[in-house]
Structure formats: structure tokens, C-alpha cells
Image 1 (cartoon, rainbow, N blue to C red):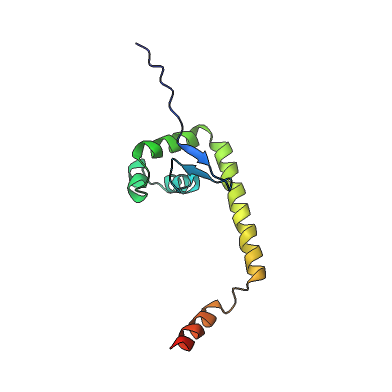
Image 2 (cartoon, rainbow, N blue to C red; image 1 turned 180 degrees about the vertical axis):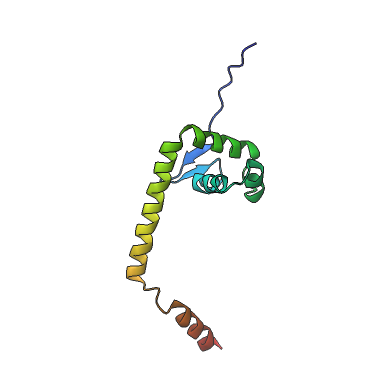
Length: 109
């Protein structure tokens, strides 16, 4: 007997172009990073309880089959995050943030 079941990959692209796993807010970035850091599928599913073990395994399998493309996507995401961080820091200087927040706390007393 030959099985001919085709399974859907539990990945979706949200309105911001971010790849998320299943119907959760967990990103492929999160699963791949945990996997690359040595976490097992079981550990990842335990850490992110909104994911099923099957979703984690499918995501890892997708990553392993399409590693160059996924790594390029992750590289682009890191680049975008750095650009956004740089833009935010130019608009809102991080210098003295702690002191300003502590001063606000004192002013409220």
C-alpha cells in the first residue's frame, strides 16, 4: 500500500511579511534559532506552548529542506531590524533613558 497523503506546511506569511508558525504569533525565526542553538523539537514545543509538536517538526523539516532560502529570509529580517533600530535611535536617543525614567518615577512620588 502506498500512502499519498499530502500534508500542509504549517507556515503562513502575515500582513507584515513575517513568516509565522500555524495560527500562532511564533515566528519561523524563533523556531530556527532555538533549533540552531541545540533545542530539540520537544523542547521548542514545550517552550512555546501555542505550538504543537507536529508544527515544530514540520517547521524544522521545512528549514532543513530549504536552508539557503530560509537563511536568506532570516538575514533580511536581521538587516531590517537593525535598520529600524538605527532609525529609532536617531529619532529617540537612547542616551540617558534610564536616568529619565528614574526621574519620572521620583516626580510621581
